Image (cartoon, rainbow, N blue to C red; front, side):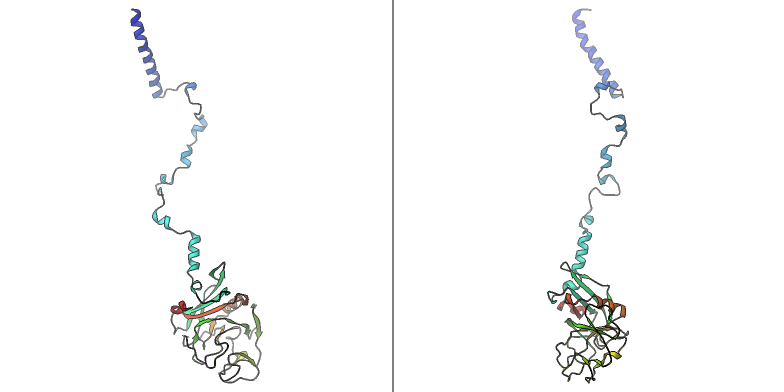
Length: 288
C-alpha cells in the first residue's frame, strides 16, 4: 500500500479506538482510577443518602404545602393572643380609677334589676390588668342596682368606691392585710339618718333608726369589709354598704359572697394597692 494511503488511514483507526472507549463508558464500563475525579466519594460515602435528602424542602411531603397557607401565616403567636386577651378585659377598659390603684374588684349584673351578679378581682402587673382570682357569683340588693340610692330602698349603689381602713367580723381575723376588729356586744353600724354618727361604726347604746347590731347578724357579718359609699355621709343617701357573707338571699344593698370566696377576696385586698370596687350593670361599665 502506498505510504500516502497508510498516512490517510491512521487517523481513522484512532477515531475508531476513541469511539470504542466512549461506548464502553456509556454502557457501564469502568474507567481507570486515574480517570476518576479526585473528589469522587468512597464506597462507604456513596452508600449514605445525599445531604439534600435530609434537608429537602417541606414541599417534598404530600401532606405539607411548600409554603404556609394564608390562614397559617395570619395566625397570631400565643404571646400576642395572651396579650390581646389581657388588653380586652373589663378592668383594662375602666377610665376613672385613681392612678395609684393596682387592685380593682368589678361587680356587674346583666341588668339594673338583677339580684345576682358576677364578681372579678383584677391586679395591675407590669402596667396591664390581669385576673387575680377566679370569677365569683355574688348577691346584691333585692331591688338591683341604683344610681340614686336612698336609705332603705334595698338597692346596691352604682359607682367606683374605696374600702374602709378596718375590716370586721364576728369570727376571728381570717388573715387580712387590713386592720381587723372582731365585733363584740354593743357594736353597731349607725344607720340613723338623724344621728351625727350616721353611716359609721358605733360602740355603745343603740344609735336608733334602722341601725344594725353587728354581733347578732350571722352568717352575714362573720367577716365583712366596708365599701366607702356615702362617706362622709349625706343624710338619707344610704348606709352600711358592706362586702359580706351571703345567706343565699338578695341583700339590703350590700354585696354578698359564699364564705370561702369572701375570705379569699378579703385576704387578697391590700391597702397598699389603693383598691377600688366598681358596682354597675354590665351595660353601664363604660361610664367608669
